[in-house]
Length: 461
Length: 95
Image (tube, rainbow over all chains, first blue to last red; front, side, top):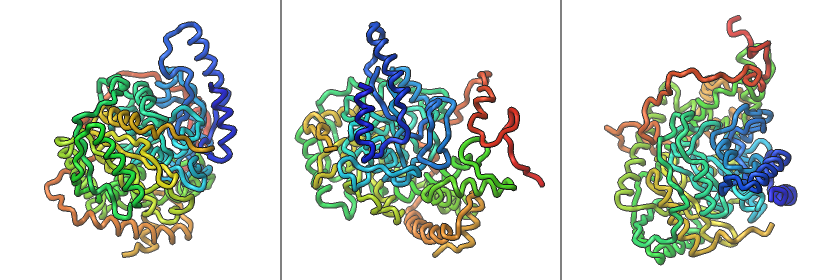
């Protein structure tokens, strides 16, 4: 099986370019070990021997972890992230490390300092981002599943763009230990899979408390496969109208209405007239909070302990030149934005204000979840855009995450599942739940998937 | 309101981020656009609204005061650009 996937990788990778490092030798070794264990009748869980690709932002011991950045191009971690350790313990076979926007900042994977990834459904378009390599590889059949990370939509938006399943768990459910930090109050790791069953299986392996992550929540994780019952009769679903943004192409809006009507047909009680009036503030809140946290987190790249290092006479020159040459344009933009928002004189007007509006967004979700079991929205306002279409306009690029950012701001779980095609390009349906209601959103996702079968369509590549 | 070249240089210095002249020119435009977009937040009424720093209820998480084994210096230093013996080699802070 591992061999078949490695062959598939060498066949499609020249066009898709989803993978930064292929760990073929290590993969074959792990596969042989899995074979032996299965043959000896050992206790083999559902993930044993199954190939996985890990976004290159999670530390893998002895395997280069670049974060899509020149800064970490030759960085080899000395420990495994908790999620990697857990997958290893499950007998998973690591195929390699997936491409991504540099330090997970971006929505198209064009910000990778190594090379851009292409959408398997249409190679002239982006796969989304920042977990674009993970999503494209799953869609192109280069791996069975992948792990991604999601700070403002970085799992769900590429999942929607590539027609795969992507889950961002509740903040605190999956350990962030060994995840290279971008915005620590927003980052979460989650699975990208071909269907909802695989998503539940991977969640069983990676969720749970970890004392090495101070924001890990002590929570008794259930068996997520038990929620895979295609029965959503009587579930109350809300459709927040603010997510159907101005300028959304008619085809996407139509696909969403069809998808929601399907849920209604399956017995859910749908309220089409929900309003979350602070939704339009989410973009500004996100692009103040995330860069602020990033500017602090990325202060560690000083060319002293690890990573790229510019050799100069004085300490300050070495540090400034290290950061000038090591970081790409988007990372610099966010460091600048964050530093500005936190600087003397602007802290109250930007950072503190954003944190207050964050409270309002959370409260609004909280009130909605008193009435509804889940909220249903598009994952993105558009279908995948063309490579190069938005690179010169940061605000346009940022807007591609308007439907996903509010979820991170409030720390909620949300899943994106395939919901059809508009002119041959994928659209995703986002299901948002209250904190720790992964079982509910998986159940809705499963019922929809079983009824429509969109996940069975594969790109011609 | 467009940021001045001096303001951009000042922020870059706070972040210890070297920038080329072309980057400064680009960032003047782009940061000004983005900040203008953020102005919408000023119209949101937030009197008596407490700030949210993170979305879970955990506070002051402490680990037990127990000694864990440290990683060996050879591992810690494996990725160091410059080292001297078991130390990171840095440039002089005071000159």
